Length: 220
Image (cartoon, rainbow, N blue to C red):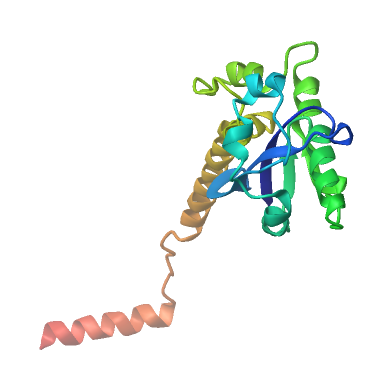
């Protein structure tokens, strides 16, 4: 199954208050394994980045001035998302911003049925505990030491590892492989039993003919 692990950074909390997307990061997985394909852009929001937001992601207004507009990367983004399931931590936040931007361009919104939200997954697995990315990285021993600031691509890669753990972990897949090997080995043993040498007893006529042949050879 193809899954796209996605994260965004924004200028604030609500697009209807004038805030915009400034970074999109996504990585591709097939059957819970990263393929190496990614989608990543910084985006010019055509407005300033508030200090409160800058303190979280470290992306400044000046840095974004020469970056593409959302309208310039929207089609490429939707092509990357096509035929995949989006995996997002606190999905309503990211899809709210992306759908707002898509609506401004007259493009179809992201279908919520094609989205997996890892936040309720984590809350169900660890009720009452902190389930932000840092807390989950610590819980699953995932290295997040370079996360001084939030970053869409960086966080998407961390979420990919977290998502695998929330789904049972890589060890579960490995154990499944071991079980399959054990079963296969047992089947091989059974087949070997059936491949043992089969002894065919000669008939009385065959024994008589065999004795006649021996006598003839001895005489000669």
